[in-house]
Figure 1: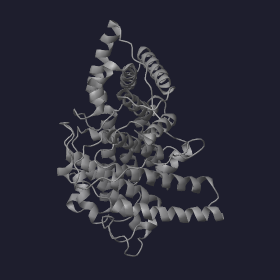
Figure 2: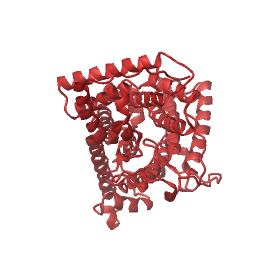
Figure 3: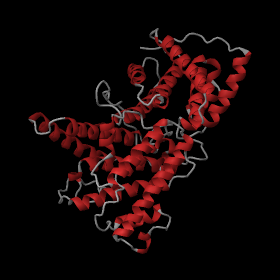
Figure 4: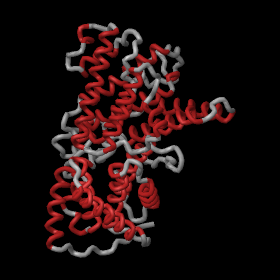
Length: 459
């Protein structure tokens, strides 16, 4: 299967002048919005610098992305109209390009794949209820069939789909929105140098596993909230869920990351290789945190850092489980705090903040685990009462409040880069979760999403 693209007509002088303005804005801002790094190796940067000159489809897509970004920064009727027109133009061109299928792929067809993926993934920026599922299905089909796509390009678009699929796993599952099967990635040599992907970074596996955890957790919570959990069918599903949870725990705990010297520098002065490794580690710990919150019986008195999962050890009490979950949440924040404040990895951080926020309860539960203290010190930059050894209930409360303040501050920094309703909705979800927890309700953000029927891509 492949695509045939009609030759683009040369733009008029006025259109050319407009395109220069759009490209300048895109290459300066949107290349960072759509990617975790903005070096010369970024395909978004390359497209903005040169490819648009031969592709009317890319030109239309650029206009749409510029429009939606500007509307997010400060909406007015003229901007919104221009954005709507660019969106319709992009949809029409995609439809025309996909209407003819032949057995040969050209270089321009890769532009179509880039637009399908970028346009579809950003669907919720335009309409919160739009998950871009139709675009995902088309892109996944083209990549799976793969006629004429080089192995390098195939790997690139598969990793793009991994990130998209992960986000769909947090949004799909009810009604007509069903999570598709995840993309398959071929293993890479542990000694092979690798260029970071603009969305999955150095570890698509960590995002794939987080997506699998999300699919399991949302499926489990929907069953609990919407169905009779006493039926025989529900019991069988629960056993299957526990088995899958144990499998995912093993995969996350044993996940390995490439060494820093094998990661090629993407050339972005704002985003270092160490930033890319830290965001990958944060995804891994967030996957464990989300999994353990839904399946706390998996927690034992061993550390989650121990890959020897075969050892049977006593399960933790409810109090110890809450402490351990909070400890993991602080670990995620510590990893994020080690990332440069200007790093492009901010664009894929918001979902991690949502996961962390669910453990920042002010409910009294006794002293923190000793492992929490060092983490709190890093998070609060020495301002936490925990630094002086205060593990009283008042000290714990201050530490949690400081962690909440950090989550809010990081969300605001993300909002400055991604001025979209998706980020605002995530912040609303976090605030509503905290408000209910502070009122004494035992609630999770996952349950709130299901009850509120919020299905959107959390990017």
